[in-house]
Image (cartoon, rainbow, N blue to C red; front, side):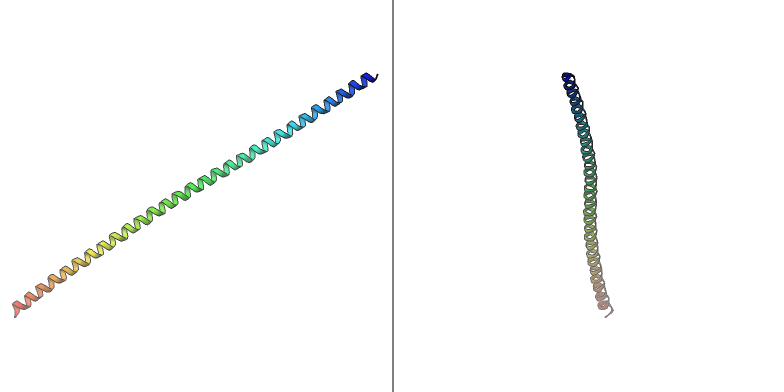
Length: 107
């Protein structure tokens, strides 16, 4: 009788140990799943951050290009204004010379 009771106790203990191991494995699997989920969320976050960084870089490059174009345009405008001023001055000088010649001729 005692042997049977001991065998039954051992069997019950084995079953309990197996159940505990199963539960521990289940909990570990759940934890692994949660960790995987967190890693996936972090990966998505990193992807979003990379996208934002790329967009910022593109925006800065566009802004730089716009600034360069604006500076070139302003320089061209200044050169054009200077050329026009020089031409106007030359014309004025020519006019003055012509006027003086005309005055001399009239006198």
